[in-house]
Length: 262
Ligand SMILES: C[S@@+](CC[C@H](N)C(=O)[O-])C[C@H]1O[C@@H](n2cnc3c(N)ncnc32)[C@H](O)[C@@H]1O
Image 1 (tube, rainbow, N blue to C red):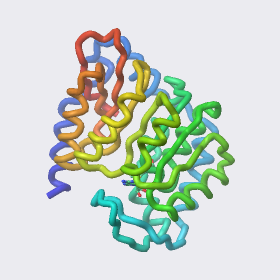
Image 2: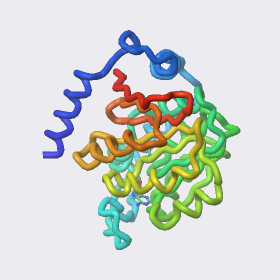
Image 3: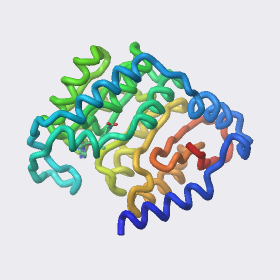
Image 4: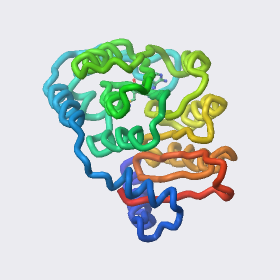
């Protein structure tokens, strides 16, 4: 059922998605040419790829908590690193997009909800080594595994937080005071997704960028994305099917929503 929903959403996306040709907003035109279409290959892409390939062969068994139900009483399961690596993170294309987003908008304070094996975090952190990247993971053994990957990549600008988003997000936001880039990539359900956005909003500013993963993954996530798009603080959104990117620039008078080919 979920798969059918996803396929239908993807077909709708393909039908609606525009290229630079049909876009009149100078900001979005620049986004397409300088972020989406940037084909430069950076040294770090190869380094992260090596870690990814090692993970695909890693048979380490982890005891993990399943946060999918969003409750405080998680089910414990055992999972192999290579299986988590194959299912939890986005592919290289979207990882490299995270890198290019940081490269383009130069956020100084980045917060990621959902570390998993740390690949997304690594792309965010390598794009600007003077940025501080904070990442939250609920499962201690997963967080420890990600920590090993950060050490391998010699990344010094990452602070890991271990805890359920529901318990730790507010205090982390209060500690950071202002977030320039927020990547929401965990607990992909409607109510928590909207709640994390609402919680983070007071800590965002006109130049902040928020990225949501899996915006069409389920009917609930699709609804969450519609709610986020209609938020009064949001002035521009970009739908890339998997990622939904949100901007808040005040100079944009009428909210604009784009579906772009990627
Ligand atoms: C899709 S994965 C993150 C992938 C990662 N951002 C990347 O780009 O490689 C989601 C992660 O969020 C964690 N997670 C989900 N719900 C959570 C919650 N309520 N609190 C803390 N962590 C949670 C899961 O344990 C999982 O490791």
